[in-house]
Length: 314
Image (cartoon, rainbow, N blue to C red):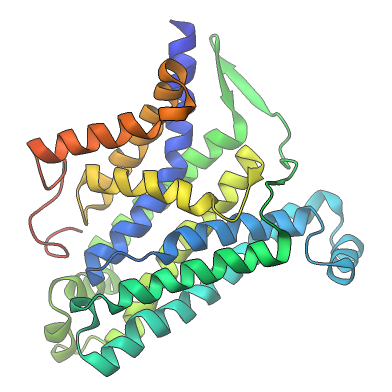
């Protein structure tokens, strides 16, 4: 029983990472109605940036500067800042060429497969840039928190993982509150329902849509940073591995539903850890996707989804 409780805790902690990636997918697909394949890349970039700062991956000049000005103990803070800034800037570049350019040239870009294909192109470019710069071997780093943990009874809780889960839920709660209570949230929901009508009502779509990309990108960047700090091993394809399971969580919870993505992300994290515990790591995706297919057969819109993407979701 103690072992099972420990595995449940581990699964929920891992699910906290999946939650933010699943919510990032949900925001883009719920508001813009297309699956953004750059989300795995932004997750990976966030993880690689904090690794590069902490493990002297930028080159002698930059690494020496960081050591002299920041110090070894505080480099992880700089790594977090660098990761989030880089991910935000890349998100704006991605928005420019997967949404704005396509919309200007072809009308409503969300009705075409072109944004999806161009986002897939960005994914491949980012992954192979990392491979070309730092290689394809696993990249390892030391967690700035070491092995810090605490116990509740006999169940061990990793301190950074607990912080990660709490931070994930707090961020999602803040986004949900923003979507419901603020002027920006109303503008985002109006774009999700009818972008053309939102434009006629005075919503500046070209200013609001980049915010969707930046918010989604920051969610991925934070998730990537937390993953690197907690699990300390990554590579150029870590985003693909995480996003595959996060997509399952998003669809399980219901397309376009933020809190559905939270439930789905936690569930697939729990299911992954329990599947590894009982069945082994080699077939871990079989139970996850098998459960997803079963739920979709019973309820095709997912647990909390609706029939139309973008309408009434937030």
